[in-house]
Structures are given as structure tokens and as C-alpha cells.
Length: 331
Image (cartoon, rainbow, N blue to C red; front, side, top):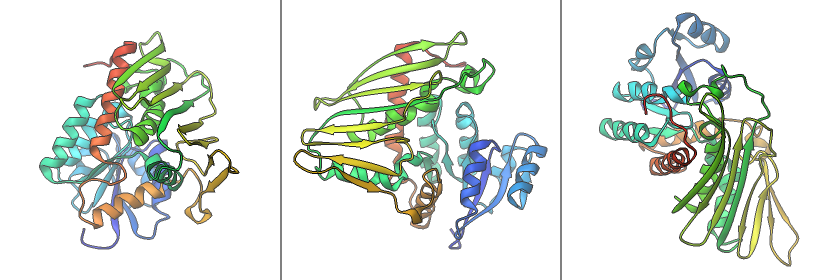
């Protein structure tokens, strides 16, 4: 870091890249200076749309751009290992979308590269950076609901998605678990850490990916989690944490909440809401600010999204896929 302004590169030009870039350019201390795609035409169109000075028709050119403080990798997750690895090997800091990789082996390789090159690396788990989620975590850690007994969370999209869609394509890491289930799994990990027991059932598509998966996780403390993800039906995207002395509910959109409700016996429910000054609930600004805070502090990983936690989530999802029989090409 040579200035107060953090200079970003965007690797990929899809919908999530566009949403993240739109939030970045609203931050006064962030500057998007380059974008890359597999084709120069796609990169140029994206650059024109957002007023980005440089557009590259290949990933390697972006990775070699020494004017960048950090690269945001927004490809489908099947390409995360290659894209993020290329940037880390070139000495770039990286924010990589979730699911972090296809499997824990690839995730471990990226973490090893980051540590070898002394570069910052973070999974783009924006949920962990959300102020309401951070408030929930603080309440639980402070004992507001006693000892955690159960965690429940769901995330489902209505669809239907055709076989050619990335959510149905094994070559792109398709399926409900990696795209949607990563949120309920990460939510449970945030509160309880890595589980000691894992069981799962799924509906498998003709292409070999999970269309709908239910997970039961257990911990040595006696805590349990019941989690669900689906690309065959829209769910309420709710979450609940029950403890020995109370419960916290997120009524909807638990992965980017704007409020939570704390229930305790003998007391009226307490509602905690997001500060309107923080922007809309679907903002990526909190995540971007955490990256920039860490870079300015000279840190190589985030306090909110630590790499060991990302690896633990990937281990859990690997175990789930083993139980439901989903394997991706090359595994």
C-alpha cells in the first residue's frame, strides 16, 4: 500500500462482478483501475460500463499489473483455484468469491500460495462482514442466549434451471451445496466452529449435481444444526440460533440481514436493526471495507473471515459431497 486509496482489479465480468464493482465505485477510498475477462470484448464492455481505465482480454495480464493493490476474483467457483492462484503467484493480494474453491485440496493450495508469497487472501463471505451478523455473533459470544443448542438455516432458489445452467453443470461446480449451501454451513461454523459429526441426504440431478440437500451437523458440546439448500424451490432464507436461555431469529435473508430478533424468557422480544447509513442490505461495501482495512494494517488475512475458518467450511462441504455422492470432473 502506497496511498490511502486502494486500487482494485476485477477478474471476471458476470453479475456478481458487476454488483461488487458498483458498490466499490461508491467508496471514496477505493478505485477500480483494471478488469479482465477471457475475451477483450467482454472486458472492454465492462470497463466502459463502469469507467475503468484498463481492460485485459486475459487473466495473466491483470495478474501482472503492478498498479493493483488487490484483485477481486468473481469467476464461477470451478475456476477460483486457477484465477486466484495466478494472481497470488504474480504477487497480487486476492479477495476470492465463495464457494472458495471446489474442494479443500484446492483451498489448501491457495492458502499455501498466499502464505508463501506473503500476500493477503480472503474468501468473499460477505455475510461475516454484515453488521447485523456481527451483532448476532457478539450476542452469542457474550452469553445472551446461554449455551448454543441448535442452529437452523435454509437457502433455496425457485428455479427451474435448465441442464445447461451453471447451477446444473458439474464442470462449473454446479449444485445447491457449493452455490447456496455454503451460507448455512458458514453460518453454523461462525457460531459453533467445525462439526464433529456430519450426515446428509440429497436429490441428485441427471447431470450428477445436488438439486436439494439437507444436512445435520453435530458438535461434541451437544449442539446440533439442521441446514437446507435447494435450487428447486424458493425458501424463506431464515435462520435461528437457540440457546439454553433464549433464541435469536433472522426473519428473512439471513445471509445479508437488516434485522434480528432476540427472544428471552420473561422479557419482551428485542429487535436489532441495521444502521440506514450502512446502505441497503445487499451491499458489498462491508466486505470491501474489511479488505481495505486489512491491507492498510499490513495483515495477510481478515479477522472476520480467517483462512482457517474457510478451510474448515470446505472440509465440511467435502464431507457432505462424499455422503451424497457428488464429484466434480478431475476429482
